[in-house]
Image 1 (spheres, protein in one colour):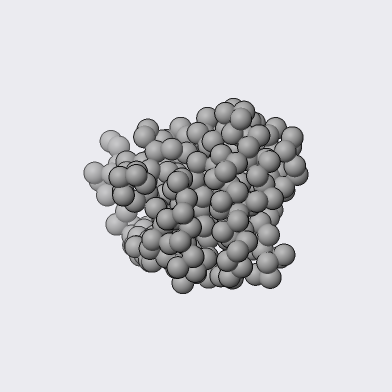
Image 2 (cartoon, rainbow, N blue to C red; image 1 turned 90 degrees about the horizontal axis):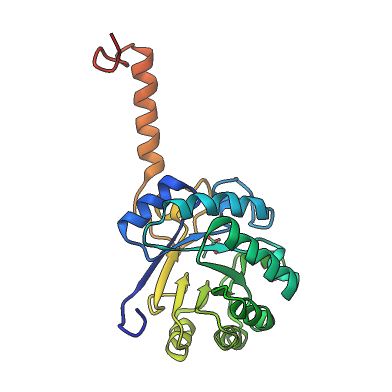
Length: 251
Ligand code: KIV
């Protein structure tokens, strides 16, 4: 798709019905992101999500996907515990979920790990720029302006064999430069319009996220409002006894 100049659409999915809808709508990649800690489990960061949570949600998404590629995030700290542990956990995720690839936060410092996974037959997306699992070390969810480091991370990830580089919260000019420099596709989130593809957290773009939503999210729908309206109608019709009707009952 990069060679043909076609943009890649990637969205997060954590359950069967959502994954089925996104797959049928035509997204290329379903990401079982560790963002599920925040948007599904109601946590403040992604750090608490467990390996067993990723496998539980990954299985559901893989079961729904007919044509999309399914990528599962390596949860903290399993992707940071060195080559052997990351290989062990990635293999477990792939065996248990049936996903086609894993995503790993980091670039240059993960080069050896990425190369080992790829040599073992595990396709890898490298996540550079803002790495949410390092939120405390980075001092918060901020735009990353260490351009040299981001360039080196992206280049090292490609050299190590990552098939895709995801860039989060990086200046658009830098994202454009890296996208032009790399042979493998880039997917951006808060990285401007010039990446080879875009990813968003589905709950954010559908208006389902409780609380803070970053500036780079476009609200494509307001499902929270639609859900509340429907639920209020249900409550009112239960109370005034107009639900269920004769047609909705058995004789
Ligand atoms: O976990 C996730 O959803 C992600 C996206 C922010 C790309 O990594």
